[in-house]
Image (cartoon, rainbow over all chains, first blue to last red; front, side, top):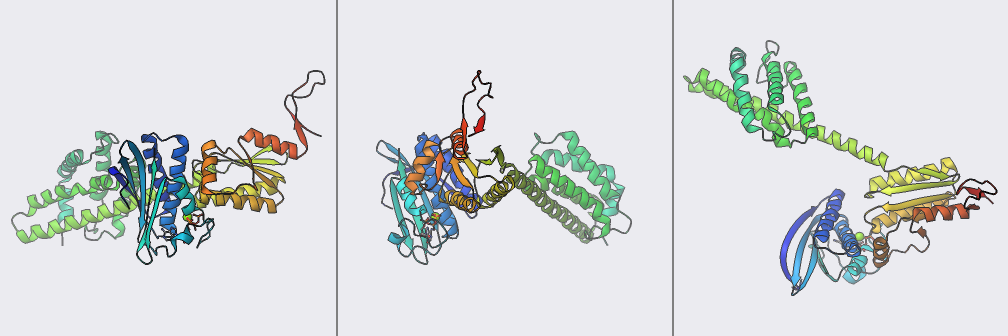
Length: 138
Length: 293
Ligand SMILES: Nc1ncnc2c1ncn2[C@@H]1O[C@H](COP(=O)(O)OP(=O)(O)OP(=O)(O)O)[C@@H](O)[C@H]1O
Ligand SMILES: [Mg+2]
């Protein structure tokens, strides 16, 4: 990902089961509370993390989330990086379409979390894996 | 054949004392267990080892003679798991018997290296087996605790309440994972049938995050309720949740939503042909009672 800020602090959360997705939400909640995001912003970031975390588990076959505090000049932000070594996304534009799902889902997780965050980058290679980095600035 | 067991039985006082001393140093969580408890547990376990039936050997941990010891270790592990000890803190308890037995072997067989080696190996294997057994029991105990808590939560989380004749409500609290949602959905549908309700209010004030999975579960429940002739109203959508749902792109336009449970209740009353009016002393009607029109 292009460097949009300097990383100040990180934490890694493994994602191997649906209870790990609960931990993902809990950790993001703790971080965004510490960083003093507003309640609306917190809810948006936690929801995006929940979507991306579940995609990592369900479509990526498990992986991890890396949380970082990023600083760019006077701005502070939270960066969420989800990565897996799953099948990858063949057509990223299609995956980002509202309502597109290869499973039984609503197909809104990926596109929705992009709208909930300020910066969003998908890096995916079929057969190699997927890594999604999203930032929300304060 | 090993003579270690009879050596233990001949030196019972010394062995127990040495073990308790090592325990005091090894067991870290002194906030969770007192000296006295530690000592009495050690002496109980020791007395079971001390009094195994004749013919029982340390080499054969699978034999019936060790059954009472196993039961005691299992009970101990489960109580440790419940008290908040970690698996290693629990295993330390039996593992600290090892240096005691090594010391005992050395006192008795230091003249013959071969004998000493045999007895030390026996002590080593025996204590390892105790520790493994303890760890297995610990995990089993922990699993039971978790399973019980999960069940309790599942039950706790599905309190379908009848608000009025034909109106049921389901206040949801906590994380809606798939297992729990399944139970919640079933109990709501069941309550609709049992009470012959035409309105079901699902209150999500206590749900911290509404993502696509939660939304999908809610929508499925609403569709199923409709098939059974009941209309669902979702209440308790907090402002931050409303904004997030919109950004996610979830469409709740076909769903009746209300900010508060009381609003949803009022709507259900109205739709079922009732009206809430303020008590009027002149005609003596009951305060705020809904009445049929
Ligand atoms: N980490 C991933 N690895 C592989 N494929 C992925 C990954 N994340 C998303 N996808 C693909 O992108 C599609 C769209 O994802 P999106 O999260 O929008 O929908 P969904 O997960 O199917 O349903 P939901 O609305 O419940 O999230 C998925 O169906 C899947 O095919
Ligand atoms: Mg998804």
